[in-house]
Image (cartoon, rainbow, N blue to C red; front, side, top):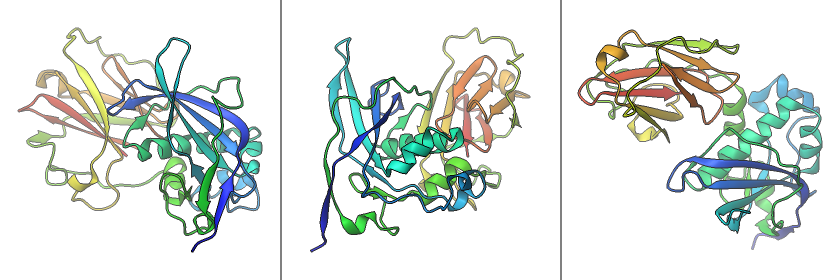
Length: 289
């Protein structure tokens, strides 16, 4: 029998956001970033290393079970605890880049646990915890570096933490790479920027039938080389005449995609976007890496 230990989390700070995509879209979500000495520290000697070698940076996190609460307006909201080593919270308050990495990792972990996407437009309420902090019983071996990332046990998140901070190079997909885009053609220029872009100069969209939907990408549809996209944005209702020659901008700092007058939030740090237009369905598909 593996030895079990009980975590008794102490307050840290709270992350407030909403579910951006999934069966409970729009539901307010609170994440208590709390601490316990039994959770291992990140695998660095100096927390400044996060800005030097993010590929090797690992943050052990213990994720609690989901619970429900009611907000002041009487609406249901969700609460999860992400328990880390106390030094993680201490250094989050000192290092803005490290804090963003930790928050992004928690948002991704909580979303993955329920097959949903949490909005990256978050706030940090002036509270140390929401509702109460839950005790969590886990196996000691799950606190070791080889632990897997599942709900209720330690998430080492080495791959995820790297995705949050590092830029990846991925090949261009074509019609044969993704079986979901059908008869499509790359007609669109995508501009990547490392600095905030100017506001879009295209004419505003006058057709209220134009909508977009962001979902997690189904990697089983990907047959190309390298890493598949992380998210897919489907924009419906755009005529081919408007799609041809369209310029799409990716603001990596603000994590936004700008297309005509659409301002689309990106669920996570993105390296690049690839766009394809399907003439038969009039759907513009953006693949977010």
